[in-house]
Image (cartoon, rainbow, N blue to C red; front, side, top):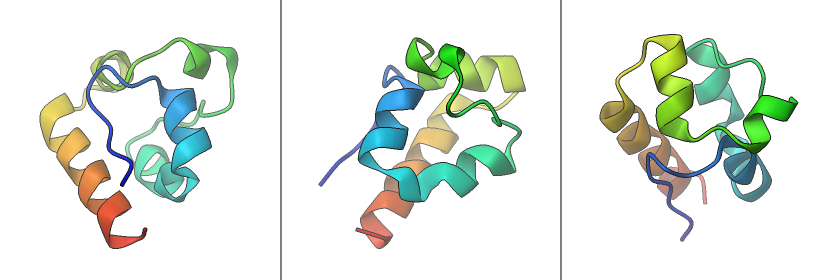
Length: 68
């Protein structure tokens, strides 16, 4: 099963688990396909959007597991 960490690049998640897009959009991460997503980690994206990274990573991994 695919899992992410705070160091996973956002674009990689979109390629491997596109089902998670609503979770990113929900917290204001609308640039999922832009150039920044290809080099930005989950931790960096969370920092920019004022989101705590560890709870978000947990939520995304739980979502992936439930929708695999």
